[in-house]
Image (cartoon, rainbow, N blue to C red):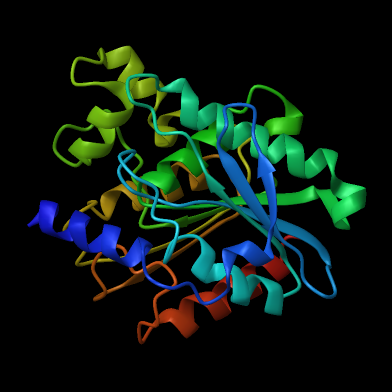
Length: 262
């Protein structure tokens, strides 16, 4: 079943996008990975950088990436989608791309008409793990986002019972030791510098256990960090920006939450 859903996700990633990616500005990262930036007609200073999911095996650029462009631009948010490098045995590759994307956006703040203090990240599934790891392990202020948006995220690499095995194996390898597993579990790495987070998932998710997102929310709460979580009873995994019945509900809540940050 999980292999079947992965194939479906690949198919979704290849579907026609709501907005043509060619309309964005292409930026090559140092690894050769590509980031595409879209600017609204009236930018309000906020920016979101998206890391689509794909179990660190592929990058679901459609429903978890480019399909969010229209909503972001309608809300005057500058939006970037990162087609990051897959690990293929080197766990540092996607993380380095993700941090470089944050640094790039901040360095081009004047040109992009954004506020470097309002650059956040968004990730879905394994991309959610990447976004949460970017947020918890940032090596310096320029690499740290101002907020984190997580859709049905992979979080706990240390928990054999609830881990998403494919994401863990593809990123860390099948023989990673306990110290490595804990280091790459964002729920264990939250500290006072971790940015606020908005989390949305479905209780019937049978690909990534819902406890993953709940654990990250709880870790933020324990540090008195602004966090919001929305759990819908039905919707499964991989909904991204697909037109599901609850999409307007959670995107309206996201717009409201973002408005409370400043």
